[in-house]
Image (cartoon, rainbow, N blue to C red; front, side, top):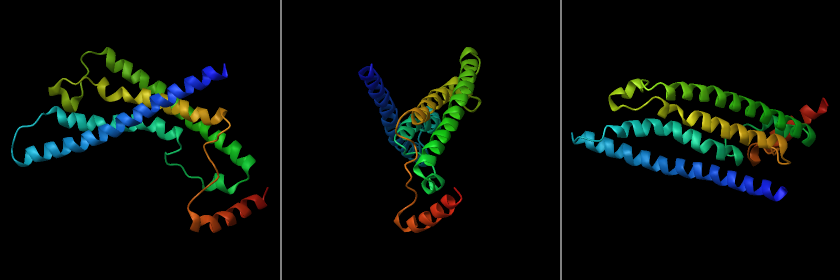
Length: 191
């Protein structure tokens, strides 16, 4: 059974890595697209009008394709000043509580954005108002939301149930260690 769970985790990690890889390639394509549009506009030449939509939607796709991988690898932005200043036992409890809150928020948003996506998908007359002339359905801009939020929720939930916590107790850089130790003494003095 443990071997099966390990294989599932490896497959899931591979899927998250693939999302990050696609997001990374998409960033490069957005840069090329911006150069393409700018150059063609500068010379007054016609260009593909879908390129602007590709760039605009890309920012949403980038965020929701790459974020779950970042959560898994603790590469997202979070502040460890408090968790670094408390004892390891309190840090463990606090870190799991923070992960629980983050997972709950992400899964709530996954459900809410899934409902929005379904409403837009079912309505064949719903088009992106800014790009209506291009016949781009509105759901194209929102499909990434429920997928990304659900994957992030799962990743935050991992930190609740695994031995590895999200917070490792290291905050700042070396020159901030003195301040950290002072804060730690102040906080632990009350416990």
